[in-house]
Length: 222
Ligand SMILES: *Cc1c(COP(=O)(O)O)cnc(C)c1O
Image 1: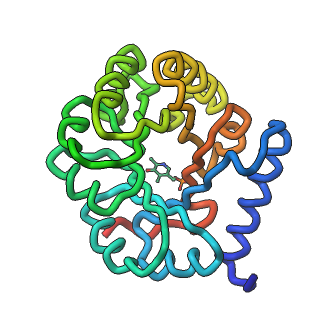
Image 2: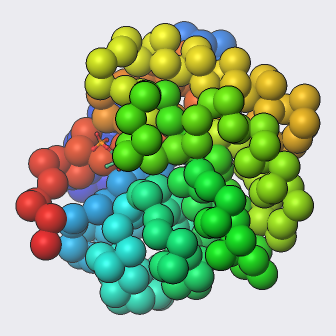
């Protein structure tokens, strides 16, 4: 492995993930680390790919579409993790492999015919603008997803700034247990970012979405 700052940061984060996995008594094969490359140029994705990264996360369609087209030669898995307008859904489905932000029926309808893997995003705040379905509407929305061609992997959440992340992730794990009574296969948990991935691993996260801890500071959005 080369000695670049990027390689060092990647290796350091991978080491911290391995520590958390061990402390949780879990197995590293249960964890997918999605490196979030939003606002970064395609070149950074190439460098990460050369370091062995295969799962990448993007959150804005207008940025992700040309970037992923430019990187078509890479054998990568693309995760769309941002809020998504229904009218853009089919375009995103054309390049994304996994969509982490399904949060309403209109989006499920817009994705009709797209064989995507999806997470339902749960909103842990009172602020509807943050994205995510309210916990009380989760099972209802899960039934809509299960009635579609989409494959429901599980739940996604962002820990609210105003709460302790561990408590937020405990809540997601409890919601996941209820979801699995309806959808036993939907056991994945997309949670944990640069500042809180250890807590997420301890609460059962299967998909970590890590940006700045690996990529360094993000350039200003273009
Ligand atoms: C940007 C972003 C991340 C990564 O955040 P970092 O703090 O840079 O690790 C994870 N999840 C979502 C939904 C994001 O938008």
